[in-house]
Length: 296
Image 1 (tube, rainbow, N blue to C red):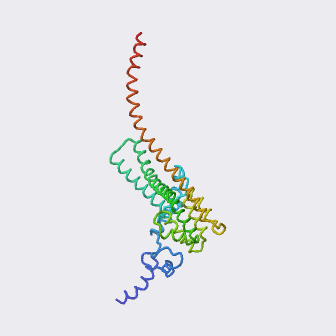
Image 2: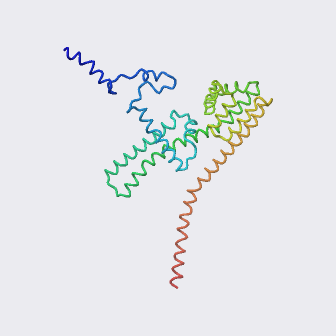
Image 3: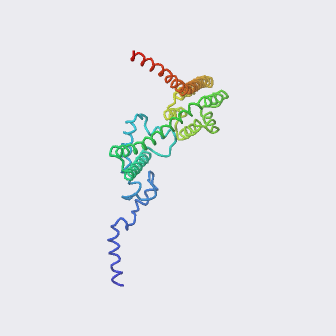
């Protein structure tokens, strides 16, 4: 017993050098509560944070190159901010590459079970992860385009509301806050974020310019300079109302174009269904005429 008690301090000192046994240093325990802390748990060698730090830059670089290779020119960060995604670029690329690796593993299992020819197996192994990667890329691109479309369609109403409030005597900040508080659409959601930026110290015009830079909608790019005349123009309400009419005319023009394209697409199957029997009916006498000329 006495020997065990004497050996315990030495054994504790030796084991304290091992990572799995040693107590976390005081600096590591206090780091999560300091400004810029990265979480409550320690970042060990095999922790999730350390794995993300290793894989993240590689996934971000590979994902960016593949997206540019397939014609995606807009930065992923802008699209993620536009759709208010909870993920940043690194986390999205890591999830995207993880899904692609999962597709590769599934394709490998399918090839091992079915034993296809070598060329088909190579196509499956290369095409499946690439398809999974592009599906996720297309999903975020479709969400971004849908968000831009919603902002564009809501802008005429938002502009008219701002024009009425400015004409009634509201200041620009009060009018924006009222529209942001009472609205339920995409523009109102973006305006609430912009007003939050104003409370952080930006001016209303700078916050609106940030919104326009993220949204990338041509109508909004024209509206923001008009609202920037708040401190110069005495009849800002009339100017905003004129711009709202212009935006509404653009929306109506695009709606008419969409309706015309859809009405024209309806005639494509009708035309094909009409031409195919006509070609068959014309081919029969034409073939008979060729036989007569060749036999004569």
